[in-house]
Image (cartoon, rainbow, N blue to C red):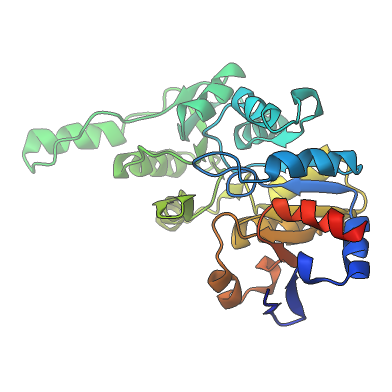
Length: 319
């Protein structure tokens, strides 16, 4: 397996390490924090071997936690999926982007309404905490240039804030439209204290070997450029999420944490921000060619594997 060279040192496949280096690697971390999509499972189902690797890692004394950018699933769905992989819910630590958003809004004592461009799952977590959630528009606007059409359009986007909107929240939303972005822009410009919060920042969301979909990153860029606002990123690789994770898990020795993911900017960038060791899995959104071509050192891993299944072979080889 080829080593990938960056500015500092070659990035090696873990199974290419010497037996002593493999042992040192396994002894260098106590906690694994991992992404989910593209690492634990893909669009079809679990990544082969992960159902054996996760229980093995727990048996070897490694603490497991999962940091997801996917707000499309409920926590109950996550728990069921992990239970099928041998990880019962009482042993499950997972950071969900909607719950991170809720925690932040509570921390700043937000009492105003929230305009949310996200899935219904995401919105429901806000509603469950008694936040007034505004969304839409859902109706198609007239695109003729007739006076009545212009008036309807203008009235909609200049209506007074009732209720007052204190935060615009953006995450994955497969139904996003220009009207949603324009509405978000209006709220941000009417109230200078209105904050822009985003969850997932992915530009591309891989669904399988042959299909990628456009992620929310492009729409976040549009809104930032249109308003001059800088979004607070509560998903990977945001600093606010890094602070949250370090606090929630009481991380005092970041280098004893191994962060695993399949995306370079989101996962490896997040690992760097937290000061963690970084392991890239080639089972998801990053190919070997993409890894070779990447030029940002802070978004490169320390090591790489093909998938979680390599941990099974790794432990066999150090016995």
